[in-house]
Length: 179
Image (cartoon, rainbow, N blue to C red; front, side, top):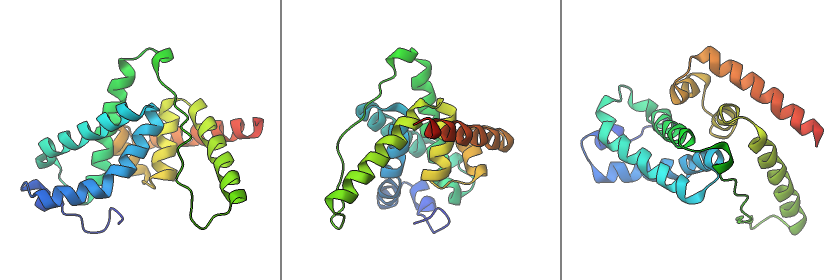
């Protein structure tokens, strides 16, 4: 379901548990994936996702456009990640390279090995980028957010998002060429 499709945001605003359940099911995995790529810690990522949904439930009355729920929720989680980073020294930021994969039932062993190697290389390069660059790359290419939605999530002007995305791609490409 894309964000442009009908989401039960209006019903969630009234406290409808089924609506919140639908929103949670729609966004829990993409939100967790985004947060985990930023924080690299399973439990902390789960905590941030939970905190983001709790804050969303508390403040949904302030959401003016129901069709922007997804980017608004990601913005809440993004701010929670920033709060976590501010409270950590750089050497304390955990980097976890989990070997837990969910193999594709149709892929053969060679394809799985190649995919795993490509994913590991992608993650390794991504981890070398500054958090602001990592964030815009994830939001743009993995979550498929528009520049305007990324600006809302990161609370930055669209021009800043464009600049960060440009430099993030440039840095990613440079590191990719070095490998």
